[in-house]
Amino acid sequence: QGVLCVLFLQDKLKQLVGNRIGVEVFVDKLGEVSKHEVYSKAAKHPQLKPQFPSDLLLDHEFCQLFKALEGMVVKAVAPKPLMNGSSEPAVDSSYLMQYKELIREQDRRLEELSQTVERLTQEKHYMQMKLEECTGTLAQLRDQNMLLKAQANTSLGPVPELEEARVGLEHWRAECEHKDAIIESLQSNISADTHIDDLEARIHELYLEMGEKDLELERLKKSTTSHQHQMKRDQDDLLELLTDQDTRLSMFKERLRTLGEKVDDDAEADLEEVN
Image (cartoon, rainbow, N blue to C red):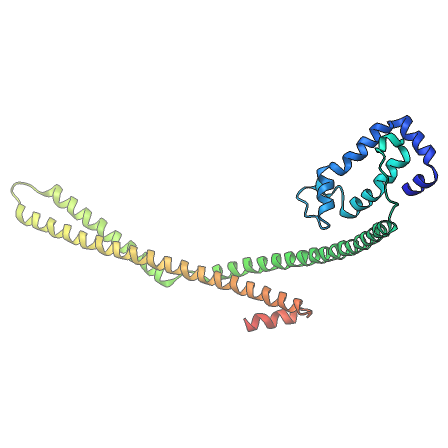
């Protein structure tokens, strides 16, 4: 369209530029384009590597076309004194052809990018569906894990060793209370006329027996605590094993789905037996 204006509407173009802009201002602004930093980069480098969006203002093909048409445009709108007596060569039609080819190439690229966006959108939709499916499966596995934990806690029940240790603790506690009562009774009945030495010896023996009972009681407490810790570790190992089995089951199901196989309830049961 610009070429048609230059070739066939020179008088109207000159009148429009002179009245609306001013010939000198138009020529100065036109000359500033080729002096701009963005124009210089685009003219020197056919393949730009922009760091900012503003670097993509011009491309190499535009700079070539501008360079070919600048002199002709100035010649068409400016009087001869403004052109300093210079003459510009005719417009090379090869530049126009290159520019048109560039536009067609950009259209093809735009079509390819549109197809790529559509394909990626479909893949995103598919991945969202898979994510929802995996989320549902994970919720089911968590429910199964909670059920297994409840069953494991129920199956433990009372432990005979713990019950025996509790009975032993109660027995030694009763013995200690009995010895304390004897000591208090002996201490209250001691007088100056009794055999103080014998009583003190008896009291000493009782204290020794109490020390032994305390040691035995402490040993039983430690044994009971150790047994409880062992049972807690065993229970944790069982829960960890159940969690690992659930994880492996999920991996096998996902692997079968990746291979295109449909995993039904019978297949899931077979996988659980293999695990």
